[in-house]
Length: 292
Image 1 (tube, one colour):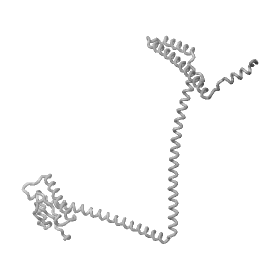
Image 2 (tube, rainbow, N blue to C red; image 1 turned 90 degrees about the vertical axis):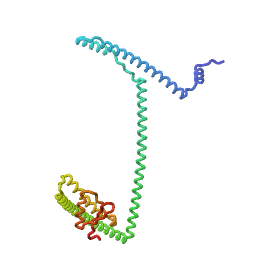
Image 3 (spheres, helix red, strand yellow; image 1 turned 135 degrees about the vertical axis):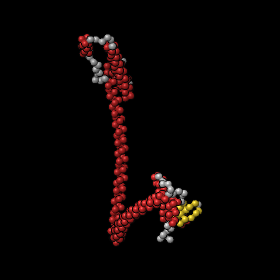
Image 4 (cartoon, rainbow, N blue to C red; image 1 turned 120 degrees about the horizontal axis):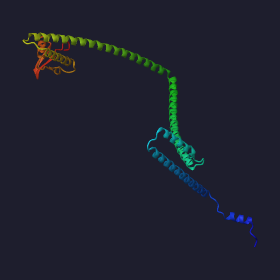
Protein backbone atom coordinates (compact mmCIF):
# COMPACT_ATOMS: atom_id res chain seq x y z
CA UNK A 1 0.00 0.00 0.00
CA UNK A 2 1.46 3.32 -1.06
CA UNK A 3 2.03 6.07 1.49
CA UNK A 4 -0.39 9.00 1.38
CA UNK A 5 1.42 12.15 0.41
CA UNK A 6 0.64 15.74 1.54
CA UNK A 7 -0.83 16.48 -1.86
CA UNK A 8 -3.19 13.55 -1.58
CA UNK A 9 -4.34 14.68 1.86
CA UNK A 10 -4.97 18.24 0.61
CA UNK A 11 -6.96 16.96 -2.36
CA UNK A 12 -8.98 14.72 -0.03
CA UNK A 13 -9.82 17.61 2.31
CA UNK A 14 -10.84 19.82 -0.57
CA UNK A 15 -13.01 17.11 -2.07
CA UNK A 16 -14.79 16.44 1.27
CA UNK A 17 -15.37 20.15 2.07
CA UNK A 18 -18.92 21.35 1.49
CA UNK A 19 -19.24 24.22 -0.97
CA UNK A 20 -20.05 27.62 0.52
CA UNK A 21 -23.32 28.79 -1.04
CA UNK A 22 -24.49 32.39 -1.35
CA UNK A 23 -27.20 31.87 1.29
CA UNK A 24 -24.68 30.44 3.77
CA UNK A 25 -22.35 33.41 3.27
CA UNK A 26 -25.26 35.83 3.72
CA UNK A 27 -26.32 34.09 6.98
CA UNK A 28 -22.79 34.30 8.36
CA UNK A 29 -22.56 37.99 7.48
CA UNK A 30 -25.91 38.67 9.12
CA UNK A 31 -24.91 36.79 12.27
CA UNK A 32 -21.61 38.66 12.50
CA UNK A 33 -23.32 42.01 11.98
CA UNK A 34 -25.97 41.23 14.60
CA UNK A 35 -23.38 40.25 17.23
CA UNK A 36 -21.37 43.36 16.52
CA UNK A 37 -24.45 45.57 16.73
CA UNK A 38 -25.46 43.97 20.04
CA UNK A 39 -22.00 44.68 21.43
CA UNK A 40 -22.12 48.32 20.37
CA UNK A 41 -25.59 48.74 21.88
CA UNK A 42 -24.45 47.18 25.17
CA UNK A 43 -21.39 49.42 25.31
CA UNK A 44 -23.52 52.50 24.61
CA UNK A 45 -25.98 51.51 27.35
CA UNK A 46 -23.13 51.28 29.87
CA UNK A 47 -21.88 54.72 28.86
CA UNK A 48 -25.38 56.17 29.29
CA UNK A 49 -25.66 54.55 32.74
CA UNK A 50 -22.34 56.08 33.78
CA UNK A 51 -23.39 59.48 32.46
CA UNK A 52 -26.74 59.24 34.28
CA UNK A 53 -25.02 58.29 37.54
CA UNK A 54 -22.62 61.21 37.23
CA UNK A 55 -25.48 63.56 36.47
CA UNK A 56 -27.44 62.32 39.50
CA UNK A 57 -24.43 62.76 41.74
CA UNK A 58 -23.88 66.28 40.45
CA UNK A 59 -27.52 67.23 41.03
CA UNK A 60 -27.35 65.83 44.57
CA UNK A 61 -24.22 67.82 45.34
CA UNK A 62 -25.74 71.00 43.91
CA UNK A 63 -28.84 70.55 46.04
CA UNK A 64 -26.80 70.71 49.30
CA UNK A 65 -26.08 73.85 51.26
CA UNK A 66 -25.05 76.67 48.89
CA UNK A 67 -21.38 77.62 48.78
CA UNK A 68 -19.83 81.02 49.09
CA UNK A 69 -18.22 82.67 46.08
CA UNK A 70 -14.67 81.47 46.83
CA UNK A 71 -15.74 77.87 47.45
CA UNK A 72 -17.89 77.89 44.31
CA UNK A 73 -14.90 79.01 42.20
CA UNK A 74 -12.81 76.22 43.69
CA UNK A 75 -15.49 73.64 42.96
CA UNK A 76 -15.74 74.83 39.35
CA UNK A 77 -11.96 74.59 38.96
CA UNK A 78 -11.89 71.05 40.30
CA UNK A 79 -14.82 70.12 38.08
CA UNK A 80 -13.03 71.42 35.00
CA UNK A 81 -9.91 69.49 36.00
CA UNK A 82 -11.85 66.25 36.31
CA UNK A 83 -13.60 66.86 33.01
CA UNK A 84 -10.42 67.58 31.09
CA UNK A 85 -8.79 64.52 32.69
CA UNK A 86 -11.49 62.19 31.33
CA UNK A 87 -11.84 61.56 27.63
CA UNK A 88 -15.40 61.90 26.30
CA UNK A 89 -17.18 59.05 24.60
CA UNK A 90 -16.06 58.88 21.00
CA UNK A 91 -17.67 56.24 18.81
CA UNK A 92 -15.44 54.31 16.45
CA UNK A 93 -15.38 55.12 12.78
CA UNK A 94 -16.96 51.76 12.00
CA UNK A 95 -19.55 52.10 14.77
CA UNK A 96 -22.39 49.74 13.81
CA UNK A 97 -25.04 51.88 15.55
CA UNK A 98 -24.12 54.96 13.52
CA UNK A 99 -23.95 52.88 10.35
CA UNK A 100 -27.38 51.33 11.03
CA UNK A 101 -28.88 54.74 11.82
CA UNK A 102 -27.41 56.26 8.68
CA UNK A 103 -28.68 53.31 6.63
CA UNK A 104 -32.19 53.72 8.06
CA UNK A 105 -32.22 57.46 7.41
CA UNK A 106 -30.88 56.93 3.91
CA UNK A 107 -33.54 54.31 3.22
CA UNK A 108 -36.31 56.65 4.40
CA UNK A 109 -34.90 59.47 2.29
CA UNK A 110 -34.79 57.18 -0.75
CA UNK A 111 -38.42 56.15 -0.18
CA UNK A 112 -39.56 59.76 0.15
CA UNK A 113 -37.63 60.71 -2.96
CA UNK A 114 -39.18 57.79 -4.84
CA UNK A 115 -42.67 58.93 -3.82
CA UNK A 116 -41.88 62.49 -4.93
CA UNK A 117 -40.56 61.24 -8.26
CA UNK A 118 -43.71 59.13 -8.74
CA UNK A 119 -45.96 62.13 -8.01
CA UNK A 120 -43.98 64.33 -10.40
CA UNK A 121 -44.19 61.62 -13.06
CA UNK A 122 -47.98 61.40 -12.66
CA UNK A 123 -48.32 65.19 -12.82
CA UNK A 124 -46.11 65.22 -15.89
CA UNK A 125 -48.34 62.63 -17.59
CA UNK A 126 -51.45 64.66 -16.74
CA UNK A 127 -49.80 67.79 -18.14
CA UNK A 128 -48.85 65.97 -21.31
CA UNK A 129 -52.44 64.76 -21.70
CA UNK A 130 -53.78 68.30 -21.25
CA UNK A 131 -51.26 69.68 -23.74
CA UNK A 132 -52.27 67.03 -26.26
CA UNK A 133 -55.95 67.90 -25.77
CA UNK A 134 -55.27 71.60 -26.32
CA UNK A 135 -53.19 70.85 -29.38
CA UNK A 136 -56.08 68.82 -30.80
CA UNK A 137 -58.48 71.70 -30.13
CA UNK A 138 -56.13 74.16 -31.83
CA UNK A 139 -55.83 71.82 -34.80
CA UNK A 140 -59.64 71.63 -35.04
CA UNK A 141 -59.91 75.42 -34.91
CA UNK A 142 -57.25 75.78 -37.58
CA UNK A 143 -59.07 73.31 -39.83
CA UNK A 144 -62.36 75.09 -39.21
CA UNK A 145 -60.72 78.41 -40.10
CA UNK A 146 -59.37 77.00 -43.35
CA UNK A 147 -62.78 75.58 -44.30
CA UNK A 148 -64.47 78.87 -43.46
CA UNK A 149 -61.95 80.82 -45.50
CA UNK A 150 -62.49 78.50 -48.46
CA UNK A 151 -66.27 78.90 -48.13
CA UNK A 152 -65.89 82.68 -48.10
CA UNK A 153 -63.80 82.61 -51.25
CA UNK A 154 -66.39 80.42 -52.99
CA UNK A 155 -69.34 82.74 -52.22
CA UNK A 156 -68.14 86.38 -52.38
CA UNK A 157 -71.64 87.71 -53.20
CA UNK A 158 -73.13 86.00 -50.17
CA UNK A 159 -70.43 87.44 -47.93
CA UNK A 160 -71.07 90.93 -49.29
CA UNK A 161 -74.77 90.49 -48.53
CA UNK A 162 -73.98 89.36 -44.98
CA UNK A 163 -71.71 92.37 -44.48
CA UNK A 164 -74.51 94.68 -45.62
CA UNK A 165 -76.92 92.99 -43.22
CA UNK A 166 -74.40 93.36 -40.44
CA UNK A 167 -74.00 97.04 -41.26
CA UNK A 168 -77.78 97.40 -41.29
CA UNK A 169 -78.10 95.69 -37.92
CA UNK A 170 -75.50 98.07 -36.51
CA UNK A 171 -77.47 101.02 -37.87
CA UNK A 172 -80.65 99.56 -36.32
CA UNK A 173 -78.84 99.11 -33.03
CA UNK A 174 -77.71 102.74 -33.14
CA UNK A 175 -81.27 103.86 -33.89
CA UNK A 176 -82.62 101.79 -31.00
CA UNK A 177 -80.06 103.34 -28.69
CA UNK A 178 -81.24 106.81 -29.76
CA UNK A 179 -84.87 105.82 -29.21
CA UNK A 180 -84.08 104.42 -25.78
CA UNK A 181 -82.24 107.61 -24.89
CA UNK A 182 -85.19 109.70 -26.14
CA UNK A 183 -87.62 107.51 -24.19
CA UNK A 184 -85.56 107.91 -21.04
CA UNK A 185 -85.57 111.68 -21.45
CA UNK A 186 -89.36 111.59 -21.98
CA UNK A 187 -89.78 109.51 -18.82
CA UNK A 188 -87.64 111.97 -16.89
CA UNK A 189 -89.74 114.87 -18.18
CA UNK A 190 -92.98 113.07 -17.29
CA UNK A 191 -91.56 112.38 -13.84
CA UNK A 192 -90.88 116.08 -13.39
CA UNK A 193 -94.42 116.91 -14.55
CA UNK A 194 -95.80 114.30 -12.17
CA UNK A 195 -93.85 115.79 -9.28
CA UNK A 196 -95.13 119.28 -10.13
CA UNK A 197 -98.72 118.02 -10.37
CA UNK A 198 -98.36 116.23 -7.05
CA UNK A 199 -97.06 119.38 -5.38
CA UNK A 200 -99.94 121.36 -6.95
CA UNK A 201 -102.54 118.83 -5.71
CA UNK A 202 -100.94 118.91 -2.28
CA UNK A 203 -101.17 122.72 -2.14
CA UNK A 204 -104.81 122.67 -3.31
CA UNK A 205 -105.81 120.02 -0.76
CA UNK A 206 -103.92 121.86 1.98
CA UNK A 207 -105.75 125.12 1.21
CA UNK A 208 -109.06 123.25 1.00
CA UNK A 209 -108.64 121.68 4.44
CA UNK A 210 -107.47 124.99 5.85
CA UNK A 211 -110.67 126.69 4.60
CA UNK A 212 -112.87 123.85 5.83
CA UNK A 213 -111.15 123.91 9.19
CA UNK A 214 -111.65 127.68 9.37
CA UNK A 215 -115.39 127.19 8.90
CA UNK A 216 -115.57 124.70 11.78
CA UNK A 217 -116.43 125.89 15.25
CA UNK A 218 -113.33 124.24 16.73
CA UNK A 219 -109.89 124.37 15.11
CA UNK A 220 -107.95 121.09 14.53
CA UNK A 221 -104.53 120.72 16.07
CA UNK A 222 -101.45 120.23 13.89
CA UNK A 223 -101.40 116.43 14.10
CA UNK A 224 -105.07 116.08 13.13
CA UNK A 225 -104.58 118.53 10.25
CA UNK A 226 -101.58 116.54 8.90
CA UNK A 227 -103.51 113.26 9.20
CA UNK A 228 -106.51 114.71 7.31
CA UNK A 229 -104.18 116.01 4.60
CA UNK A 230 -102.40 112.62 4.27
CA UNK A 231 -105.66 110.66 3.97
CA UNK A 232 -107.12 113.05 1.37
CA UNK A 233 -104.01 112.89 -0.82
CA UNK A 234 -104.00 109.08 -0.52
CA UNK A 235 -107.62 109.02 -1.75
CA UNK A 236 -106.73 111.17 -4.78
CA UNK A 237 -103.78 108.87 -5.61
CA UNK A 238 -106.05 105.82 -5.48
CA UNK A 239 -108.56 107.48 -7.83
CA UNK A 240 -105.83 108.41 -10.33
CA UNK A 241 -104.33 104.90 -10.30
CA UNK A 242 -107.80 103.41 -10.75
CA UNK A 243 -108.49 105.74 -13.69
CA UNK A 244 -105.31 104.86 -15.62
CA UNK A 245 -105.36 101.16 -14.78
CA UNK A 246 -106.39 98.53 -17.31
CA UNK A 247 -109.96 97.47 -16.60
CA UNK A 248 -113.62 98.23 -17.09
CA UNK A 249 -115.48 101.15 -15.61
CA UNK A 250 -117.00 98.79 -13.07
CA UNK A 251 -113.53 98.10 -11.62
CA UNK A 252 -112.51 101.77 -11.36
CA UNK A 253 -114.65 102.59 -8.32
CA UNK A 254 -112.82 103.55 -5.13
CA UNK A 255 -114.20 103.02 -1.63
CA UNK A 256 -114.37 106.21 0.46
CA UNK A 257 -113.70 105.59 4.16
CA UNK A 258 -115.49 107.58 6.81
CA UNK A 259 -113.42 110.54 7.89
CA UNK A 260 -111.97 113.79 6.57
CA UNK A 261 -111.99 112.38 3.01
CA UNK A 262 -115.77 112.89 2.89
CA UNK A 263 -115.34 116.68 2.88
CA UNK A 264 -113.00 116.41 -0.10
CA UNK A 265 -115.53 114.19 -1.90
CA UNK A 266 -118.29 116.79 -1.36
CA UNK A 267 -116.15 119.55 -2.91
CA UNK A 268 -115.21 117.36 -5.89
CA UNK A 269 -118.84 116.36 -6.38
CA UNK A 270 -120.00 120.00 -6.41
CA UNK A 271 -117.42 120.73 -9.12
CA UNK A 272 -118.58 117.74 -11.21
CA UNK A 273 -115.19 115.98 -11.01
CA UNK A 274 -116.38 112.55 -9.87
CA UNK A 275 -119.12 109.97 -10.19
CA UNK A 276 -120.71 108.76 -6.96
CA UNK A 277 -122.63 105.62 -6.13
CA UNK A 278 -123.85 103.98 -2.98
CA UNK A 279 -123.17 100.28 -3.12
CA UNK A 280 -121.02 98.79 -0.42
CA UNK A 281 -120.75 102.18 1.21
CA UNK A 282 -119.78 105.38 -0.57
CA UNK A 283 -117.83 104.74 -3.80
CA UNK A 284 -116.43 107.27 -6.28
CA UNK A 285 -114.43 107.42 -9.51
CA UNK A 286 -113.00 110.28 -11.53
CA UNK A 287 -114.77 111.43 -14.64
CA UNK A 288 -112.86 110.33 -17.71
CA UNK A 289 -112.59 113.67 -19.49
CA UNK A 290 -111.12 113.00 -22.89
CA UNK A 291 -111.15 109.20 -22.36
CA UNK A 292 -114.83 108.47 -23.08
